[in-house]
Image 1 (cartoon, rainbow, N blue to C red):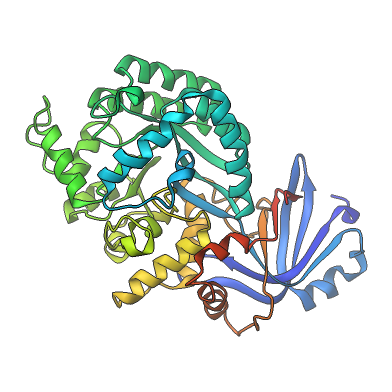
Image 2 (tube, helix red, strand yellow):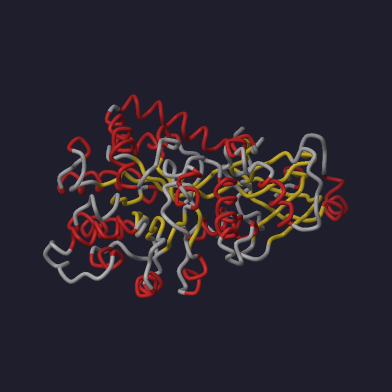
Amino acid sequence: MAVQNLSFYIGTFVNPKDDESCDYHRAGLLVTQPTIGGAKILELLPLERGVKKYGARMTRQNTTDFGHSLILPGFFDMHFHWVQDDVRVMPKDSLLEWLEKYTFPAEMKFAKRSYAAAKARVFFKNLLAHGTIGGACYSSVHEHAVDEALKHARGDFVIGNVLMNMNSPVSLTQTEAESLAVTKRLIARHGVRHCFTPRFAITTTPAVMKKGSALADRARCYKQTHLSETPQEIAFVLSIYRKLPGFEKVRSYTEIYAKSGMLGKRSLMGHGIHLSPKELALLSETKTSVIHCPTSNAPIKEQGLGSGLFDFRKVERAGVRWALGSDIGGGPFLSMFDVMRSFVDQNRRKRVPGATYVKALYRATLAGAEILGLGRRAGSLGRGKDASFIVIPLGDLKLPDGPEVLLKRLIEAHRKERANYSGFVSAVYLNGKRQR
């Protein structure tokens, strides 16, 4: 690679490595080199050492100095509903009532392709502006809404249409044959970008889950659904399934998904708050991941659904992988900075140790990329990875000695004005190309 083609970026860098550590350069230099269709990271190093090594090659044309700004890898939001953008701040007294009163009517509008196209264009542009460059996304039941979402999404996303075959509004209900036919077409059209997405066990028949899971597994597609978000949901699910042939003696929500073929190393279970030790063992055994959505699970007074506190320590002890998601529109804000804040805040109030901002950053970036099988090229600023990152101006914030204090000061300054997180990101780069 010709040395004159290198690009250099100067700023303050926090680069996640795991739950407890990250690289921190108060003054750092990111060096990238072009590849076919983009750029890869050559190295990240302290600025002083970087200038000594590359100073002769750094010019006004190939060097971008972001000044007093923080540079992070782009976020992976591992659970969100792009079609629920309009109901993010609607009243949320309970999960099932919120779905009936606000969510389902909003999703019905996506039956019109022109509406879905216009909404997708705006939503995914806005999502990128928040620094989210990958993740797992739920669409509406409509086939064309998935097409429009994948057309406009920028970055590494898997997206699927929610499958609804029972206990659903008439206008959102498909037959089993229709659901499977749509699944086949979307897999044929989008391959591994399609995510097989039964909405949850309440709305999707076991036959569709089992047959659709087999289709997804053969195509190596990811699968996603909701699991154990609230006690009321769990009770309702069990009351339905214990009346269905083959499920009469089912003991748990997780067992229903196991019998329906939904668990596995490419399976993402949204929420997973109220899980027994046996359920966690089953998730671990099948290498199924759980996606935690703190802003959605938060108390109603914080614009969440009040679903409960996710016990991340119990999940980790069971050996279950997990990452963070916004759960738009159960969660009220698109910014993963708000999600990180909520994760730390809720655990701090309950005096749960270990819920740090360094951990939250890892779970909002690299952990999600790893779960999606992208850890070797995305999720952090490591050598050989895609040159994808976001830039956050730090204003008058003074740089501390460690990353935990820096993230805390940056994020907690806006705890009471959460909408401010939407303006944090000033620049987004995907594969070395500036997007905004």
